[in-house]
Length: 370
Image (cartoon, rainbow, N blue to C red):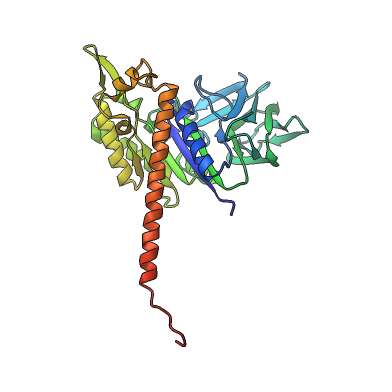
């Protein structure tokens, strides 16, 4: 069976560099199968926006509209929270990785875009071959996908503005038609969780459905650490965001990914910001009340004042701003989260096995001639 499990991991700057998520992606794909890199924005909207295990470039011919800054009055930002609007000269290129344990093969590109009145046309070129033209013009606003199939292997795709009005692209998916995992890294620099409320509810619901997302992860809290709010206010914010994205779907799993420790120097010592324990407690409560799982990143790091220990570690695991980890630190967090996922998966399999055994033992035995 060609089953693909798709994970959508939204988050702030700790996710935007794809360091935590690339670690988790690689380990999951090595264990369960590499079904492709997943979703990448059409144009690089943020300075630190980067994806590991894929080659991605774009020029400055794009105008970016971000869910974080509420730059689209309709709330239509696409699955990745960034709408890339291209005019004359706009281009982007995506390719499989040259080497590595995962990401070196794909069998399809999916170009996610917005249809609209007076929409323009963009060109698509696979591996430098014949150019195809795709019109985004339609009688009404809507979402669409243009798929380019290819033999499973190394490939690249060139996207360029061609003619007409502006083109509005949400992003490009790189996948393989083989069983395994796809782990979408959806980082939004400077985002607080409540910025996701800027999505039109019907639109983001349709985007998650179209993407075939099985597990929704929300990893926020680092930017909220500067907010002077009560635990109850943090809780109400987070619960509303979980409900806004999940929309009561029982088939969409969800998980709240707590923030890293956030610290500052206080009287010469590196101390956890007072808001962090409130945020972590609020997220845990919101996750459980929404029927979601919860991963305590803060506690996994060591809890109170753990940023100090991470900063003093050799090799250093935390940056000097005491708000972000180093690449080595993010890799540690990714590995800890992967192990937690696998522990939860093992518990699930054991529970299912126990329930199956109980069910079998409660069935009446059959007798010959009955």
